Amino acid sequence: MFSISIKGGSPIYEQLCGRITELISTGVMQKEERLPPVREVAKQLGVNPNTVQKAYSLLEQNGLIYSVPAKGSYVSGSEEGVISLRKNAMKSFNDSVRYALGCGIEKQALTEAIEKL
Image 1 (cartoon, helix red, strand yellow):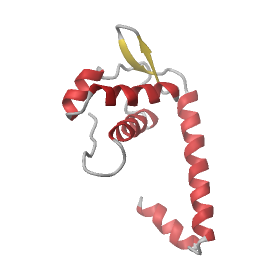
Image 2 (cartoon, rainbow, N blue to C red):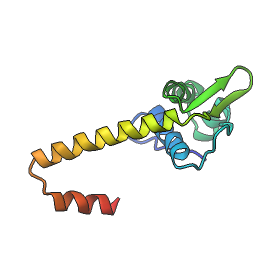
Image 3 (tube, helix red, strand yellow):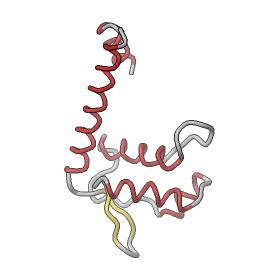
Image 4 (cartoon, rainbow, N blue to C red):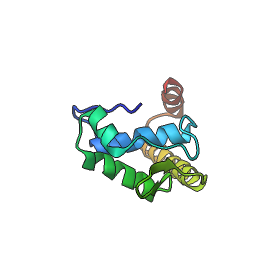
């Protein structure tokens, strides 16, 4: 279900957190859906369970999941986490566009880059 790149790039916990965030925000993972146990994900990815736990903790801090002791972690039923995530993404996008325009990149080039994505 989750895929990461061990070679270079961002830290594994950030990749895992980003992938789960994407699955939640696009609706692939539904409200109240149980996430796979930490040890299972760690074994599947070949990483330390602490790495997976760090990703789950970050997701919980962002309000995207919640944990029930001895039961597991679940996708939050609240839209607040996803709304906050999207607001942060738009702010980051706006900052990046302003920076690109300030560097002399034309609007048409930015539009073409968005369309390619």
